[in-house]
Length: 89
Image (cartoon, rainbow, N blue to C red):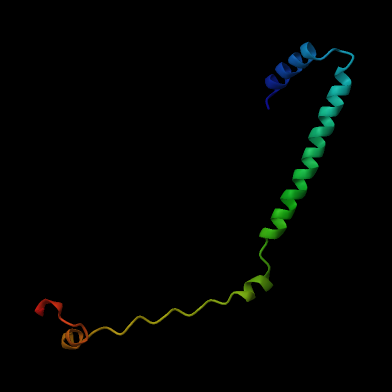
């Protein structure tokens, strides 16, 4: 929030909230923001901790060797013998 936004918000609060209640309301708003900051900081710390990669985690997942491709067909007569010809029916 920029300074001009805070000034406008302050003017609106002075108009809406009576001056004798203003310190109490501002204290409550400050406590609310402080509690919100504390609770979200704990969540972010937990997320960072869970997202951290440890060396023991890397050892659990061993890469699989790549599968060998099928042997290429060298003789087309063998392919013709394996597949029945449906055009003769």
